[in-house]
Image (cartoon, rainbow, N blue to C red; front, side, top):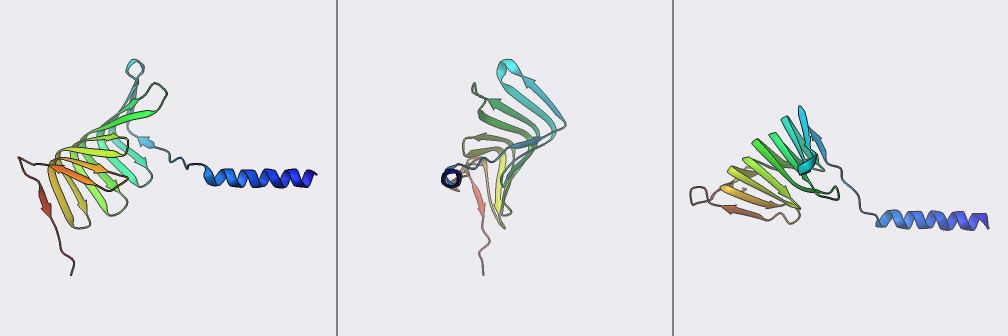
Length: 149
């Protein structure tokens, strides 16, 4: 009887483990942190780096807005923002806003994938779908494509 119970317990744990969603932690490093409790705002300053999986953002300052239940609502990176996803996508801007699965780059925004470049005033990158929306740089967007041989 004990063997059957142990076997069923092991099967239940194995099946349950396969159905659980993997939690990917967010790691933030900086020279300084100030937490403003009334605003539920964490302000990181100096050599800021935020990582989650293969997404990395570096900036001079980072504002992290935390919801009432402790859920991360929005992240704003300010000053000399550099963004990368994996080894093939990188970008930069004056400001980056992360909300849900989208990164909005503002001010001299640029995304580079391999040798190809997209530039604009505002670039919205959907992390899940890979969709990119670019809004004009002085009324226009700019794309530089290097055709493969």
